[in-house]
Image (cartoon, rainbow, N blue to C red; front, side, top):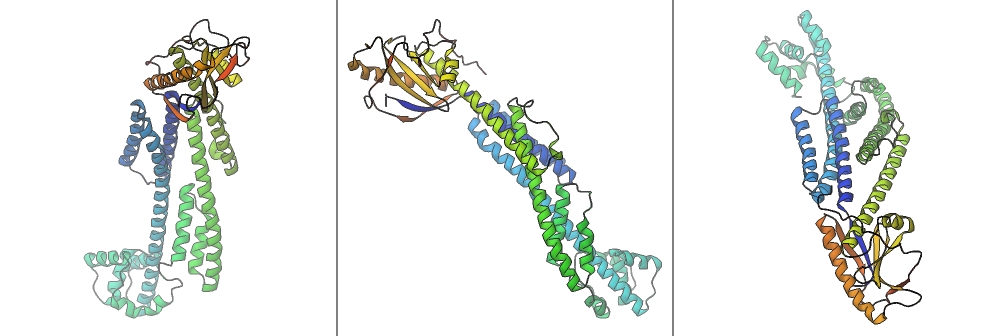
Length: 443
């Protein structure tokens, strides 16, 4: 495969910029994870320290040149942080809804017990009656003992209260004498639809501002105490409203998180002054998504420009070291014209043409002057020597941490060697002095 080739060159500079951008995205995700988790009381110091340790391990991988590991681990860490905080929010909301349901059952049990005690004419101490009106579990324990005819004691009082909080069935005395009140309760304990809506309301609040009350909570309380037909109407409306609100809250949170990540990546490239600097939390969802798209486009454009510049510099420095005539203005000419022709100082009748940006086309060429050039019988030897130059270029690039991959190549003689007339507009002027060689100490 000594003829024309299509190659992909990835420089160390390009890889490092990508890796720095990935770490910046992890930093943004970590900041969101800590802020949201701390605001909702979902994280402790040990968990935060462990997460920061994972981030530091990525920076260590970059410093040690373990780029492949970093490019696998950084996106996984970013995804984990974003998914983990959503999982924690959902779990906390579910626990909050379950606690609300338990508190409601305790209040209902206390109200039923108070009714039964009054009906039985039991002597009620003022503090006991007030506790039952509040739904105090300890008061329920005392009331159960009083209804059952036993003398309350601190030990049995605490035990019964704990059993009631855990959802155990009340003693037989309670169920026998208060059955009528129990059957009169408007909602069965642990109604799954009510708990689902309560969990949604809690999650919406936690995604936004945890301490901000929502109008849905009062309506859910109303539904629990309403007659069946009225309850059904309220719950159906809440199902639709909270479902839409939760979807919108999640979309907004995701858009904000993605915008912050994109801006962090831009800042890692030095684009901080070129992206919009307004407070992202003040933007509407559509504006957040538009800003994110603008920022990503700017990042991609700058990264592509820098990568192409680094590739051109690497190839020119490598070919110069292999004996091709290189001048300092050639990189600019290549960028503006899209192609460049270099003469071999060792074989003045031959050279190489390079073109392209992301993927480079490289092919040996022969030079003609006034329609006359090297004997075509020498062309195959020139192509064979060019193959050795490609191997030399690959080794040199590798020594700097760059990579050259041949994606397509033709064998010697597969196509006639391209011949270029001296003075062809596509050919750069001969160099007066070679470009400075790159050294292994470059950053």
